[in-house]
Image (cartoon, rainbow, N blue to C red):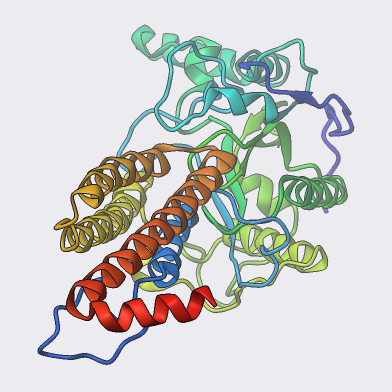
Length: 426
């Protein structure tokens, strides 16, 4: 166990703030047209409504939240991913995304939901995340920065001198950001369960930190509910330790973890990129999150993710999701067009032709409305409107069809119909 750091700020702050940015299944007959209406079996509409509802539910599973009470039935995964910057980028992750400290509008953010976000800052909610991190760095790492800058000046490289902001935003010294998520878009627990699991994890993380030499400081975290994907957490922390030889605190993930006495994944092998204490730490954290999630009723998936899904960048994941969305939308559009084409087969009746045209416009409008809506209640209303439309139109067409058949029967067999009518009158 390493010695205690002379400067320690515990993670016992309780400031928690809300975000301020705020077909009747019929036998195939090759001699009969395969359409919705025939002279013996008027279409009831149920099968098509069922199929349409299924397609819309697929769309919902990609765009919206899961139905209440159903999230704990199907397996889900726990996401735990850490880093300081994107693989193909030089600059580090910004805090401004996490606390929504920006003015521009992003396509993937639903602004009216931002009020539901939850944020926590080590120095309270009077500071932005960026201000809080700057404040901590100035308090703890000023000596290290000054010594580094003095070395640059002595070696005649004043061009390398950095401000604290520059130093804090460099990949070598920047805070580590961890994304934590339970489930995925369309299949995840409710917000209350997610928050309860995360807070339980944070309590455990604080205890581990204090018992193992305090190798890191949690600077801030945010719970996002206003994005297109599943609700998730952003957790930022800085790894540091006391350099006894130089006499000041310095950033350093590897040394901080070594002093925490964590073992290598393979102690008998040489330390390297895939055999280091951070791998041990991340595995420990992921396991703890999975245990907590199970304790809260989640059915956690144990099988490893398919190889083709591992290591996807955000852009690659979004492209894959867009392809799936387009396939679903294509199915919906084709289904709508099929029903309109079928309806047109009975448009020999002038009074039905207008209805078919209305169905075309109505379905186009509803599909577009469902595809672009992030609001779950709006999507549900779209489904209900389409179901009601089909039920109403099917009933009208069935009645009109029945009257047409009776009219044809009267023309073809007027005597029989007259007897029947008289019998019914009696």
